[in-house]
Length: 111
Image (cartoon, rainbow, N blue to C red; front, side, top):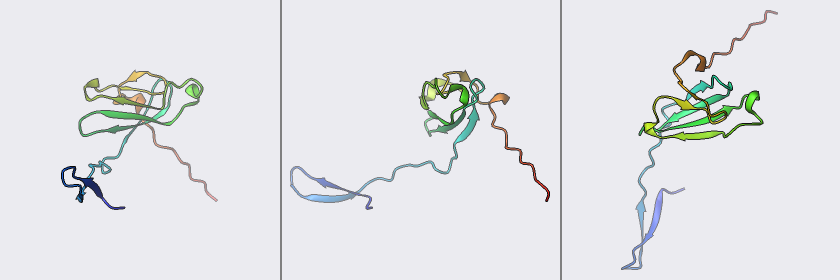
């Protein structure tokens, strides 16, 4: 797929291909993963360069699977450090210990 747009100039009626500006993607910054302390849903937080955040539900907890308010929410840059869980609408601080996702404990079996 070409990264060019076809533009027709109104005063000349000719077409000129002009390269489109590159879209700034921030794929090098991985999303943060947190857990809602109220409903235990697992959330993914993507922060934009302007400071705004998109909070998405990655795993919907059984406690809210029938009553979830939403699966994604957008928070403006001036919303402060707290997050709002899209599923249960609880406001929480992602830095508190109850929001951390604990690593899976895998037991090794001996044969």
